[in-house]
Structure formats: structure tokens, C-alpha cells
Length: 65
Ligand SMILES: [Zn+2]
Image 1 (spheres, rainbow, N blue to C red):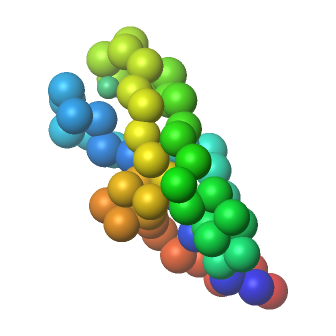
Image 2: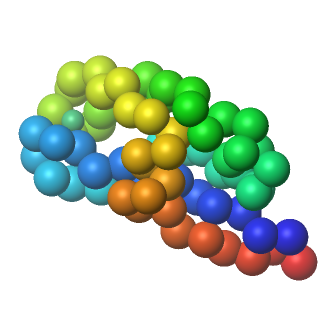
């Protein structure tokens, strides 16, 4: 099974962080237009990001057997 581990890049510090969201392809389709609220560990701000944008900018696709 293939899972996309989503990384988010903080716009204030330009540093990547894991969103803690891991989705398979079906999950991505279902949540494609959802918004995530992320407590940023780098700038202590809360970022609202679209799953689609996070996926396009920073998904790491991993395979789990
Ligand atoms: Zn941030």
C-alpha cells in the first residue's frame, strides 16, 4: 500500500514540518479540498492550508508492505 506523508513548508520561516497527516490515494481524493489547521512549531503561528496545496508542495510518498 502506498501512503503519502504530507509535509508543510512554513511561509514565515521556510522550514518544513510534518503535518502528521498520512493518506492513501483514496483519502487524498476524499480530502483534496479540505483545509488543515497546523500549529506551527517554527513560528508559533497557526497556518491554514489546503490538503491539495500541501500535497503538491511537499508530499513524500512511501510504500508500506
Ligand atoms: Zn510557521
